[in-house]
Image (cartoon, rainbow over all chains, first blue to last red; front, side, top):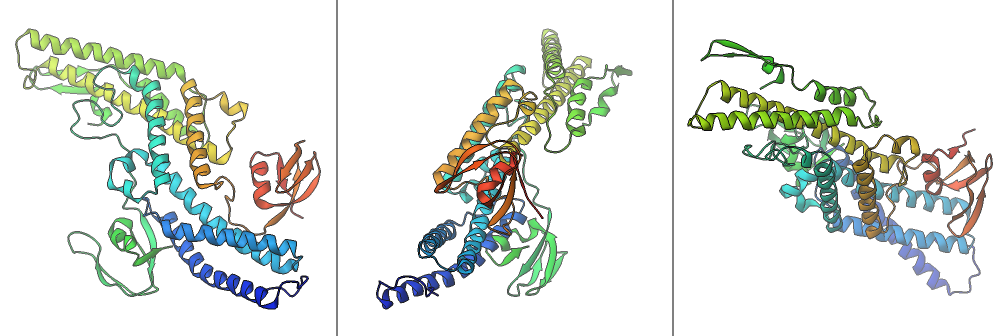
Length: 229
Length: 218
């Protein structure tokens, strides 16, 4: 793994263990990249925001840092261009996945900020995302109040309710949970009930591709038993 | 109750048709504006139509209140009375709500587009877009941008780059406008108009999205 060039002033065993460390990091990183890719795909396809993968994100950032440091060393030691660009590609790929994952989540928060703040979806957000969501809702409320609501007659000024005579919050945009999604399971789930009445039962076989309403398989996605593609 | 149902009602008790002036026409104008604009594009804020709809709402409210008072003055139970004054009040109430929906939809949809501008364009909006926003929307853009930036700095990660999956880590670019000296990484580059460079994709992306640099494909 460690390139042969370099002054060799360090002892051979130092470079060997360094190489081993990077190799181990690369091996672990492969599994983590797979996990990150999976989390990213699920988040992309799901209509509602999913549980934040805190540990995974932390590990991904550590790998990224390690890769960046390794690349710096390589550049200093004049390592072969091909090796450098391979590591660079790896770094770029991991960074893209991480950024895209966080970005998709942020954009879902932007879209459904009020709904998320009022339901248990709130618990799926990271601490920083919660701060962002709170700030977003405050800003949005201020904007709508200033430009519309404060100018409407008393009794019609609520952002959540059509008027004070509404029984519940009837003006909050929600994600459409019955959108169709493509999905695949890694291990067989067997006979699975798609709706409440038990009329539709589907046999979920491993590695087969299905198109189902997100609502029906919500539980399976949350439990990590099915992947969205 | 669909708004089209309100254009005339058969009032059972008095056996009369109640005709209405088509309320909500101005509000529909706002919605049509939204529907006709391309996704991600904003039209100039229609403050004329907007103010008119607000005015209508307040007129509806005055009418509504006076009808309610009339019912109370006649010593009738406001909850159960079903006379023409009651139905008149209902129509004003529903028209008000219909107008509120339209106003909220107009503002909210525009706000969503404004949010997307931070991702697509960047922290500073070009003049031709700024002109289309009303005062509150300009403030909203600034505040919302600040929220995004705060989140990114908490994570120490710029999420506005890397918008497409990476193919090559480095790309050839042609500079379209004089940008001047720019510090990229640990060295600075002079980005003069028409110059060609070989840059890291993530370094070039913000310039490309602003339209002052383009990828040079042979």
